[in-house]
Image 1 (tube, rainbow, N blue to C red):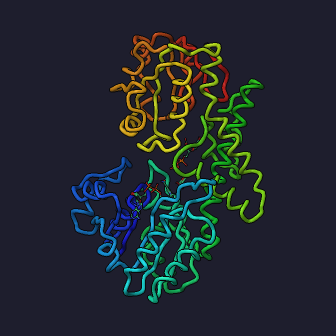
Image 2: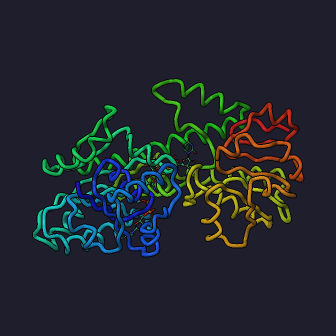
Length: 436
Ligand SMILES: NC(=O)C1=CN([C@@H]2O[C@H](COP(=O)(O)OP(=O)(O)OC[C@H]3O[C@@H](n4cnc5c(N)ncnc54)[C@H](O)[C@@H]3O)[C@@H](O)[C@H]2O)C=CC1
Ligand SMILES: O=C(O)[C@H]1O[C@H](OP(=O)(O)OP(=O)(O)OC[C@H]2O[C@@H](n3ccc(=O)[nH]c3=O)[C@H](O)[C@@H]2O)[C@H](O)[C@@H](O)[C@@H]1O
């Protein structure tokens, strides 16, 4: 099939590349010329494991190309995906200006039937709004489909190639048939395509993200309680996760959920509920708890240093909002850095992939180490904000040589408590007892 993907961010580029991989001809359109030139030159603008192989193969075989020219991108496309940002507007509700703006631009260019797909995360009613934009600007028939994306950064290619499910919201038989053919190669393992109406599909996406954010938040509260009552959250997690009705995944407590989606999507769903005069109480609690959870690690640090971190030197391992990505949008590490700097401390960081993005944001306010051990040189303590694999089994002897004090505050529970006792560390993690 001939496909256009508008927007080449984490979702658009993965979608475009993975659709090319099953034999479709895909043109990706973006307004950022520098990004498009980079991709034309065979360079990936983001770090996403496994994407490079598919990206290069499909470019080489002529199925994947890039342009800044919308008209050229959509001319032959049967299906046009919109994978555009839907950031929070001033009031927290999703800002639809990218989607509606692109819909308007597309509507003025098309000369034959197209399926227009909302791949972005959009509030209920957006398919109707997009359809209205087309109606206003063209007589050409289009079908507007809601096809939310459930991929996770860091495992995006796998998630796209082998999705748990594909959700397609449309009332049009013609669009349903085309979308079904397009997705058939991805559901070979027997995973379902769920066809539904546009509104249910749009809400499915927000409900999924909000439910997952709620699950994490629930565990964060359990962890906080564990610390007070002297229980161990790892034991509790295993104890409840083995019940199929609860499930083992997404029960890991930490320093609050971050990233470009959970924070904005929980907020957008709550705002949408308010708009419809529904008081979605759980979501308000989730946002409230998550705000507080972002400060638990710095609270632990401040308590240890009796409220005064002025002149202290901290090493911080992990900047990305999760491992295997360079994405720092709403990364808990940024809040920690901010709090420590506000207290007059010095911070030296290391992250395997996100250093460039943080340097662009914070410049010389912090130090950047070439590896995880250099970050520790002369540090009063180590803080851990992201569970990169490389931090899980470090060279403790080397750490001891460079750290000023054997003090670790771990926001991701990477180390075994007994091991840290044996190694003689003061070790303060989440929902577990402090060992020293
Ligand atoms: N990042 C993720 O893991 C996931 C994101 N989503 C949703 O997908 C949507 C996109 O998210 P991301 O890919 O993370 O965003 P992103 O910010 O990484 O990428 C958006 C891209 O759109 C481009 N763009 C903006 N206006 C444009 C226009 N008029 N024409 C062409 N290109 C334009 C930008 O230059 C950028 O490259 C959002 O609604 C998000 O909530 C859904 C599932 C997963
Ligand atoms: O709509 C989106 O953008 C995507 O949002 C999330 O994916 P992503 O944000 O890439 O990453 P997650 O693995 O879900 O992690 C989100 C945050 O929750 C935190 N988390 C996750 C799991 C857990 O057990 N504990 C925990 O604190 C992570 O550290 C991270 O800050 C969803 O998992 C995807 O299904 C969805 O498509």
